[in-house]
Structures are given as C-alpha cells and as structure tokens.
Length: 148
Picture 1 (cartoon, one colour):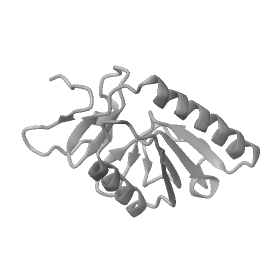
Picture 2 (picture 1 turned 135 degrees about the horizontal axis):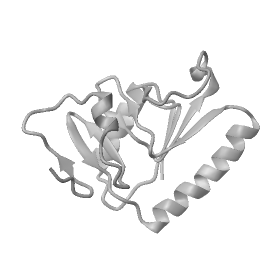
Picture 3 (picture 1 turned 90 degrees about the horizontal axis):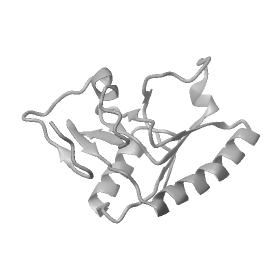
Picture 4 (picture 1 turned 30 degrees about the vertical axis):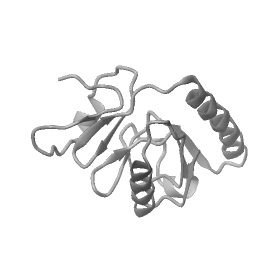
C-alpha cells in the first residue's frame, strides 16, 4: 500500500491505530498525522517553509532555554489527542510545569496538545483543515496557536 504526498490514505474501515503501528510507519522523510482513523501524509515542505521553521525555532529555542521555560519539539513529534488523533505541529512548546515528574522526555507520544503550537501554513492547506486543527488543539489543552 503506498502513501501519496499530501493525501489521505483511507483504510477499508475506519482503523484504530495503536501507538506502535503509528511509530512503525516507514521512515521515508515525510511527516504523518492521524485524523479520524485516516493516515494523512503531510509530504515534504518547500524551502520557504523550512526557512521559516528554522528561524522561528532558533528564536524560540534561545528564549525557552535561557529562561528554562520548558522544551521545544519539532514537526517529527506527534501528540496524542483525546480522540486518538495524532497531530504534529511545525513547532511545539511544552511548559516545564507540564513535564513535572519526568526525569527525561519519553520516547513515546506526549498526551494532549502542547502549550504553544506553531503551524506554518502551506498553499495546499484549506481553511476548514486549519480550523479543525485549531479547535482540536484547544480542546486538548493548547493555550496559544500561531498559524503563520
């Protein structure tokens, strides 16, 4: 079964994915999200998208680490939403208060939305898609979303 760029892979029936199945997806250089039982290949990003992501990440990293505010995570990190969806924002911030009790970051998915989500919009994004993501992040504990 192949997965095409920027497409939704529909299974014959709505599939309930385990964390192990999701983590076992091929390491093909693409980023995937899981929404409503459908695997979404977010594809590769263009140069402008990557440039914006690295500039914002560098600035946020300097601020977060200098003030010991928490951790920044990149788009390869998926977060498990209450409804089972797996979301991967371009940049995510988790406040240190939410990481209390952890000696180190887990190798599995973090539960709920990050405190801050940065989504760099692509020409292929639809208004409905972005509105759905924003609503889902807020419903899962995200405090701020910055779509750019």
